[in-house]
Image (cartoon, rainbow, N blue to C red):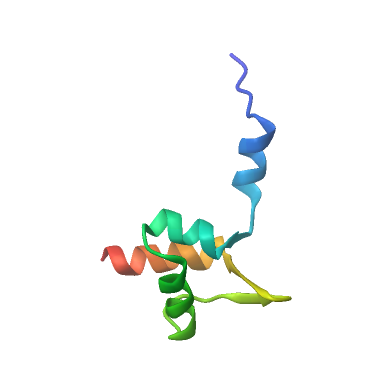
Length: 68
């Protein structure tokens, strides 16, 4: 049996960064709360131009810390 992965799913699996809005949606908080988490050092964010991006590995690590 052959398993196929749609191209969108494959892109999502290999993404290294997410937007503040995406992180907020997953955490079910506002974007301002995510900016605050970045500012206070709880969540690592990278500034790219005028926007912040969050590495998916850092985001996953943060979620593990708050789940414990």
